[in-house]
Length: 274
Image 1 (cartoon, one colour):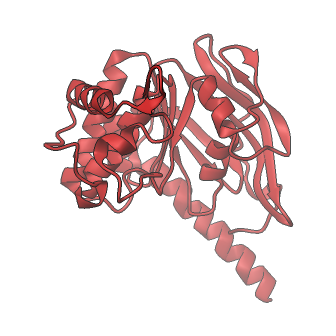
Image 2 (cartoon, one colour; image 1 turned 30 degrees about the vertical axis):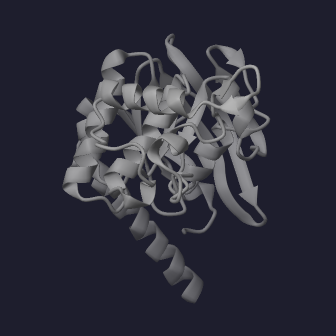
């Protein structure tokens, strides 16, 4: 990571907003000891939009999403949800307000079946004794998976037996089925082959077509950005340095930002070694 010198970055994007924002953060900062993870983040998300979030490893992408979904607090800054001030106290609090997140590790239990993972910690129970209603779990899980076009032949097998793409799809579908209207996807396409990646991109497209769910995806592959996202933001050195509609940018522009970041980092290293 480059030295924490704000003067190194001149392309800082200031506060932004739009009439149809469902989520907006301004001046978010986060430190981990002496390390500055986020120094002054301004970001917004419109209703029904898919926003691609880019940046080098350690740029602060996952930290930002974890702050917005209540996993950890910001040191400073403000957040608005559907126009109202919002400060999630926990992940569950964020879920109650319609925000859910699919983490890199998916939070799936390998030994449990597809339908059990689908309703993990949200199991429907039968009255009057409060027993877990597995029949309903199977029926509803199958209906939701079929509705959004996820091809899982059997839902009574452990998820450990499924492909990476199928596992990712189950994690995404579970969040969608929780009736969240804001969804964060943390590198769900990482280390995935073209066929499995296409499965997830198709799922995102179907969610987008419905127009009810707003999505932020952390991505590294520019092809995925232009295939799935309406808009793209880039975090560099704890700042948003680019925020554009995907139709108004290009892979060359995105790549040049990254190349310039490495140039600055090398200059800092050379100065430190001198």
